[in-house]
Length: 289
Image (cartoon, rainbow, N blue to C red; front, side, top):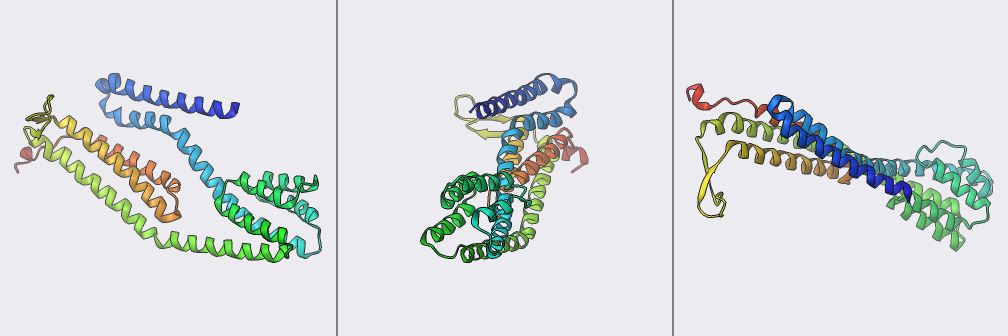
């Protein structure tokens, strides 16, 4: 409980620190070193959002690694049982194998069976600790067979084959959509290039842009400053990059959490490119067009 509370306070403190960096940057540094504003804003944003994002993504990676190690664990357990070992001895033998993501959980499972806890209940606790839906489904099948008195080794082999088949399908899907993910990246950066041209060359050539309802009372129209238009385009790029990354992750690995790395890269790269380029003004009229 204390560890969880500390994590919440840490994340809140990092969010406040990031917000403070961005505020100081835009209030004071912007007037002295304007070319550093985009970079410092990115640093402040990373300080604010990186801890919770890393936490969520790390849990996702650990869960995926646990699912891969679970296949090896089932194969080793089945081999040990087929060799004539009893279940407690087979589990003890598995604790000597290398399962990076499941090492502690396998040791806990073996210890619980040694203490006399029924194998099915210990295995359900094991599945709960992994926080993986696929492992929970596999464990449900194994425990039902164990309670019914069937051959546990046959069930372990069948579950292992099913998980391997699912993993193979996932890898094939990931490789098949690689080109589509590249298209998402290309479209995003082409989108940024178009907005940069608009902000650097077209907007400075316009005396003003009248926007209906832009007046304070919501009636009539008033000129929209170029700075306001640049800010709107900046928000548009960040939003587009964030959701494009989530789509890429969903297409590649079937989970939007896996798209967080794409989202961070696209949003940060898009913001840096646009914010840096927007400091340049090349009016079309000055080019003689």
